[in-house]
Image (tube, rainbow, N blue to C red):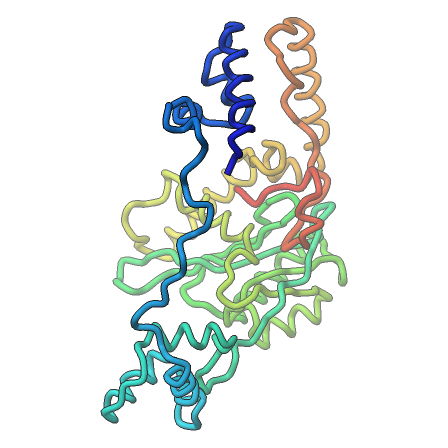
Length: 357
């Protein structure tokens, strides 16, 4: 509440500003008052000060408030041997079946909250905390792979073909794929062996990340990885963001207009469609997260020269007509590192690629 002498001083300053040509709204804004407040201060009945009560309205105790005895009785019921591991939503109907009413469900919840007992009350095992997967970083091709399996519909309702897909995190190149009619750790391990032989992968060179599906953690797959010298990490259960590159790639592939509107008639048709799509993705698709070069170009280390050429083209264009460039030219900078499940400090580093496909 502003005292009367302060009001008079502020009104004088506002009047002086208005006589000097300033608008009332602008003058009030500079002082930190609203126009409506100044208009109210100018009224004749406001000249002798503010008649509003300075004190807040006196607190009135609700008529339905629990008495200390009722509150104590309710807490004794909540913490009794019969109800100590139950929430109020389970306690209230049990009390009603016994012909007893202590308080409403919301009141019991409020009492628990005020006493700091709003925790797990059910007699059950607490949720197991699962830590985030180990942070991985790829600075060149054939360092970190991620893979997953997605469904391709068959003509038989409820039946699917299964697309196994391995992608290089650094270059986004699909380094291996196959379509099978079932999910199997044996089939996945055969595909991994073929990829390592084709890419010339040495023991201890790559880390493969996947989710927690049965083919990913089957004994055959784990034994194959150990024999090949391939390290592996897995996502947390039901956390798709831990395997973002595979999920993003599946989204890109399945939203292509070439995807058949009807289910696949045969395994051969599904393989033919995936083969054409992989050829387009690796050789023609310019990936936004790696500077709009193709995965094949980045995997073959051709992207730096391409990005450098683009930068020169834009610099020449700006020099030819500088008035059309209000800021710097478009960023064609080379993406040096790609992070998978980074720590918070790593996720804030510059030049880190996004997971989009």
